[in-house]
Image (cartoon, rainbow, N blue to C red; front, side):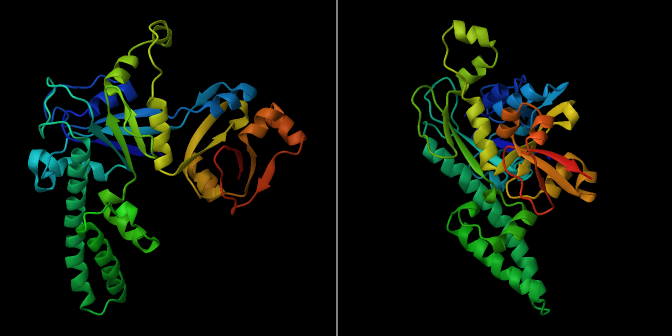
Length: 343
């Protein structure tokens, strides 16, 4: 199970620079709008010290971290929902992602074109969010038209859906993001329509020096510096006395915004592996992430918190000390669980 983050923003704000730093892949970061027309896709390892500590006691042949996919999407512009600057094409690509990382330019540089003139990150964010809202309004209004026709035949399900669609429509008409007002009854329709404003949003202010904020899901990063750091070896960074990279923090922030947890398997000592799971899911669903047979033929799991396993020194020693828990199909997997599936 993999999850993807779409990197978006106005043209020339640092999207491709961030993508290059995250993935260490060469990408076109030319100084002109729409230089990234085909989205770049990169797989990024989720930094995890726990995995390394588990591997230290298991001593496996192979260590496999969990991953997140980042998609570098070309710059949106005002009226993108009407097709400006290939906007509809880019908005469709955002729909395919699980969360959005929005870059806002917060540095001055007269040599780098800004499509809106002066630097103003608040205005830029409002432009992007407005485009997402307008695209969702278009989607909802199409569905409303279809559902209204279905209610005329006395379809009770359509009548109930119409009520929910009207609530979503009202939120969007007030220029609000659906994520802030989402209710349990809206979830199915939001998932089906892949509404853009219901996706988790991480804001990154591309700064030259001073940070903007330290609030949840907001980061201030010098992306040009990060791009340069990504090309240097750790020894060179230390020798040049450069500041540490903030990218690991950003990756973790994206992971948390998606409401993900990590569990681990040790596969008889051959491989220590981290797996990604939505928070709140049960053991059989975790098994399905590892292998479809593990969910289909699920019997039980043996589970231990990663710290307790490290303290025990080995899986066999943890069993001898009675630290392994046996759990059934109703067990809710916790972040940091090390699991052995029994089928």
